[in-house]
Image 1 (spheres, rainbow, N blue to C red):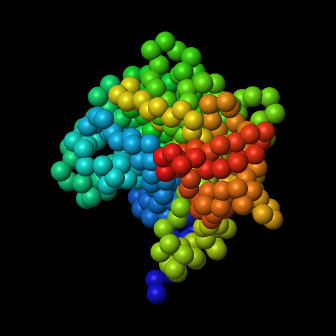
Image 2: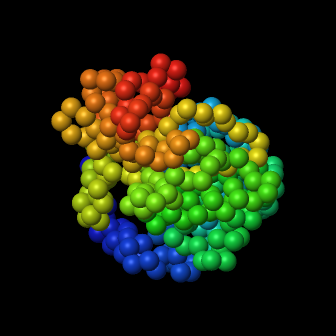
Length: 326
């Protein structure tokens, strides 16, 4: 049975400390190739599971990339580009951008090993490119935010997956509002089922934030190295929250009448309370088990929920709509 060496665990504990104290994004913080290797096997792997979850949510509305160029912006070790190329066989060219030259070199090397048929090029944001961003929200200075907004406006498609914290979620919401207020704005694809003002900005919703939970591969819970990593670093493997945002100039999706569940329902005896985003805003609904047993079972058992359709009145979900897309 393989275990982490003490020196490996010490390196990962050091990285964890930098993430927690907020110094990880100050500069090119990779100290060695060994850090990149260990990060790619652990922290980046978890980011990859979040990207997988966002792609499953997009698949639920029928989205696929409409362009053949991919830019992994703020790439780190490049887990995002590898996940995208694994999920879709349509990409012909890929580019990596990061403040760290060491990270870009590592990302290119790993990508070539997995996808030798895809050409690696220099990053150039155009309407022929999909820009992928992951876990950069807490590293963006005010000027960097402006640069990202300009990049989103110039790209053909954008997928942004970030931490499931209130801080990261609020930053994505602010950027979403900035983009949609501009002329010739790209279409918002997800997670929002509408292009109106974000319902979480309404008075009374300040305590909520837009986040979701990713399913974790079951094999992780039978892996001794993951168990040791979790125990030594104090990271709970069971919960993996994330926030995300997607735009497109190539496609838009009609999602009238659909709602997306935010976070996880709060379960009580015989009922649960569901926070959901829809055309009329963000609201909390009560769902009694007897009213829609199939929906109740899914919402209290699963971690990932697709868009839902239900009939509701006066704060109560009365029945699941048979036309529900998922």
